[in-house]
Image (cartoon, rainbow, N blue to C red; front, side, top):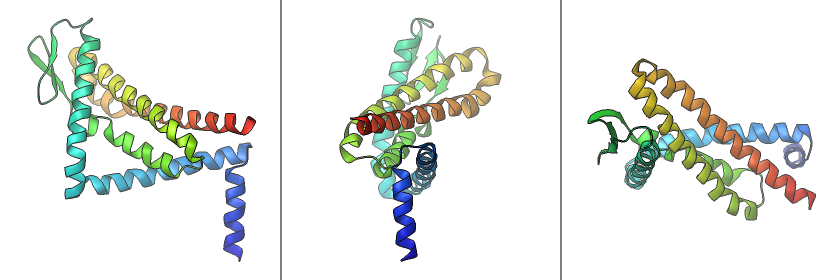
Amino acid sequence: MQLSFIIKQTNTLLHERSNRGLALRFVTFLVLYLMGRHLQLLFDNTSPGKALLDPLYERMSFFTTRTCCLVLRFTYPDIHTSMDHAIYIAGKATIRMFPGCSGLMPMIRLSFVLLFYPLPWYKKVYLWPLSMAILIFASTFHFILLVPIATSYPGWYSLAHNWLTRIIFYGFYFLCWMMWEKAEKWHSAV
């Protein structure tokens, strides 16, 4: 009896349009993100997971490296990419995309979060492709930033890859969460 009361109170608070409700939804977002991260890492290390994800990693890496070369062609006219997703500038290998950098992992995590996030299903149907587009942009932007750093400032590459771009990705996650909240707010106002 006591547990059902707590669940009802939490559900009411979760859907409440107040600062407390917003804070609880943000905490829910973070908890779901961490759960999604651990489940995705577990799934990524299994044979069926590898069989399913490897072709997706390949396609995402192909898209990101090709797009990066297309955008950076204005700055580096002699830029090209290889079949193993390495980017060459003036015939010198500058940077190579590995599966973990393709942007697929953040997309899987955010999909998991959105699946269980307290929004109506019809909202999730259009928020999911928008969120994925934002993360594809973030992944491409991440790589576009890293190429000039790897070329001109190789000593800063590790710091930029491990910290700067991670902060950028978390900023894009936060942008997706704000978009979800705005979508729900617009729904409530109607």
